[in-house]
Length: 294
Image 1 (cartoon, rainbow, N blue to C red):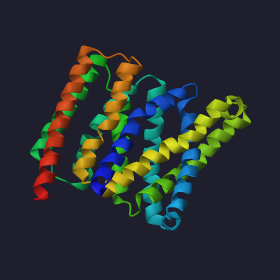
Image 2 (cartoon, rainbow, N blue to C red):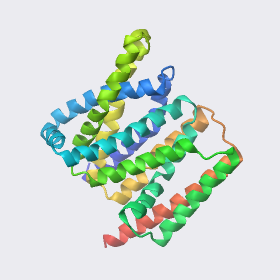
Image 3 (cartoon, helix red, strand yellow):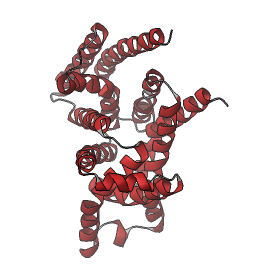
């Protein structure tokens, strides 16, 4: 298998797993989202530390911890990532996976908008059209429901800011994720310790099966990340951009076909408007990538 095919395989597996991961969180639906976030941080960090040791990245991780500028950047990304993780788990537990999938559908367009606002980048005509379609679709959903799709906007916004912050961080992907997860550890331990001291939560009341699933949250966090970083090293950015739609597509299908979340004709219309914008955005990215390689 050549490098390009390996990259496509790893990318498809990474985004496919992210698309299917709500089924895993559903198994832990009896636990509050905040407690699940605490366990995910603890077990995710242990898994990431093992991976950094196995891949020889411990030295890079330690250097980042001693670099004040990098540490501050990682603290900012840690805040965004923790909000994103917690919001997503909450969306799954509250049967709002459809809205969560919307957040990840519009995330690429939010990232472009942040590039304009924060970095002063200029929008191309196709990007303006794509953002206009996405904004219209979100507006249609807000009118239909009588309120904005807050969870979707929080997910798209936090992950967009997270990507922007990580773009400025001078640290390798795995080492950076290990550092930012480590920065989440103190509040996670405080929360789990408080629950344990008050005889509450999974640590004192859950079955063995639940405990095993909680340990598995580390693997669920780390494996797709490793596959993604492998794909990102081997593939053009435009190809990775297309593959990223596998995750919200999987979440969308799970929400509608498996979990039976309400999905009206009006909702389909709003999603169709957003998908049109994404099609324009993806076509523009693809054609520019193709022309740059000639």
